[in-house]
Length: 465
Image 1 (tube, rainbow, N blue to C red):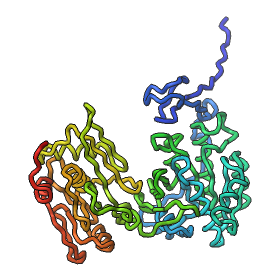
Image 2: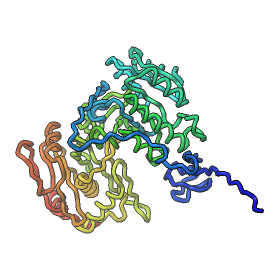
Image 3: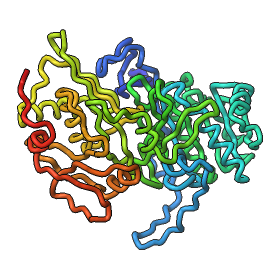
């Protein structure tokens, strides 16, 4: 007689790397995918339903369907009181939105959000600030230093997600700030705070609460040493807006950049200056970035860039020096290093200018980071100016993309770039040909088809040393 065998469903655990988010079957000290040490964390599996039952057995409610002709009500925005912050959000704070604010430790995230909470509370809105990292007394000390004690901001120190959601539901605030998502703990998830499972679960619950109750929620998120938001990547997909607060510790400037925004442009920036009174917004960042520029220095070029909808003038600095090393240094701050390698290769192949045996240093002044290809021509001009010890005219701005063939490609929003340059006193611009420009800019625009013509016109024939 056969014995009846009983099978017990075994709950299996997954292990996920917090750096590259690769799933592993067992724990290991080193992730085989990205090579990071001590980054694999335990992740509880999703709960499964009863055996033999399908989703069709218990029917849910029918979803209300619409069409593309349905006219939705316009978004109702509330200004925070900080113009630079409102600019990055797309014009103000949208109710029932979930916002993730990330940045390096000590960059000023808590300071910025406390100032935003105080200014928002001064408009008559109800604000709750919940910290899982600092005591309420520490936050009050910061508020006293920033002269924010007159704002009616409700403070609390708590990490239990269930208690936080209960409090928010009873208080019904207009804005809730959670600092930070990595310290929150959901008691229905069997893992420690900061793990992949906890971060995913707490972000999901807080985002759902924002949608159901119409409360705008700002979540503070830590970043890894590579600059990525710590925790599962899915958190960025859950929220409506992802803002990154960046800047160099040695500089007083801070940039609030919109990485994702469902209610506005996703590439907008806000500029702040760190002072003893906290973060002060900068209404004209171009003038501030160029305030300490020495016009007589070789290797210094002014680039007219675009960040979101804002034209921005920044100084690009280059230094070229003989290298004692077999492999010369290529050091870049604020720009893409692979883009620098491409510009150096084009200068050698198309213009006959070699940087072999020379160290090359490139820096974007002010701690700003530039990503648009329109800076290619300005970078090339700075490099040749530093190599030949020939300065570029101080009243000139430069912009244009360099192709691998050496041709200069047109870029977008050239009119806005030159209007900003004209406002700051610049008289001339070097730009690619095939760009349609009106006469309203009233600037002397010199156009070039290829990079070799530009080099010949401004630096003459360059002899190899």
